[in-house]
Length: 455
Image (cartoon, rainbow, N blue to C red; front, side, top):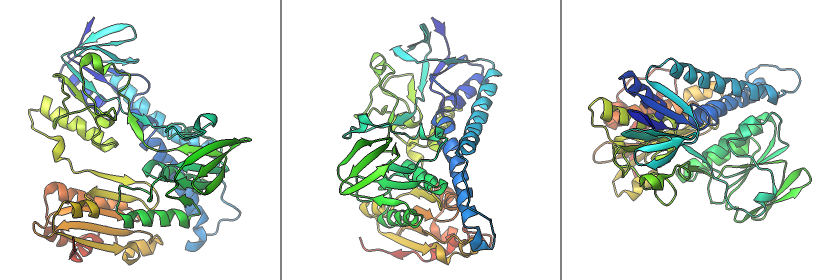
């Protein structure tokens, strides 16, 4: 049996940084990863997908050159092998950077293999038994593949496998109208494929307010993407080298199918029963406000605890755990204000409550919206799709949430994120003096237009 001060299982965006902090303090740490350092973000999520989004936007801008007086002779072509190679290079650079960092770190042992609990303090990996008084789980999540008629008869893609395509689909059918599916839908449409998005529910991006969901659908349709909501029953059948997709009354002749119907935690093969660790009905590990499980000495960080499926929330889990366990701080999960982005183009930046959530809370609220067509920077850039929206508490003047769907919305939202985390009321933020010409300069104007709404 090998003894360590701490064992970290999973090398996503929380575990490796926590392992490094502990090693820097002189602890003996084992970091166990079954496949690649960096987790989903580096290997199958943010880094490769946003690299692909950048290639797709470059193609879109090139095709739109004439609007700006830029003449490009002939058609804009796409070399999918180069597109794929560029995304893989970004991933490998990040992954190799982590490998080099850990190889040079005293006290750190990186072990590649599948770890399983033997008891609350011991795990087995590669035929060896490791023990430590502290064990941290950062095992991430993977795509869900639903049981749909005919799905076992076809070759389908997931968000993990589609990033390795080096040919252009003739017609990509995207099953699932949420964030991952929508990013790939617009990306492949801009690469030149026909694209259909099929969503079982009534709206795309169903977590958002209806006005945001509708605007997202309009953006996608404006680029020639077919959107099928309220799809009802979905089924598949082989059609030569392609797939017939039935979605309610719609019939789609697809060459490729992307299943983007959600993700599930990688907790089903860890031997959690042997440690006594409790999960909820969806398999997420139950944690308290400081990320501790029900078993003393075991913590769960990142996607596997169900408190945020994002790189930045996973990294914040590391910050919470490190602050409390290593720095004598008292940080809590409940203090986190959730923010995220949808990386279609233009992007959606989101923070805090939606209007629907704010209404349901029973608060007296104020709402303000402003179309991007009334933002100078958007007009100058010729990108006026979308709108800005903010929700505030009438009595406390607290900013409750915001959505910025439009040019640079993923960056502009940080002004409101920062204000909310600092506890800045909207009248104070309203009197800031932002730089012109920017999109962010409209935040004070947006706040000045806040008006009470009837619950």
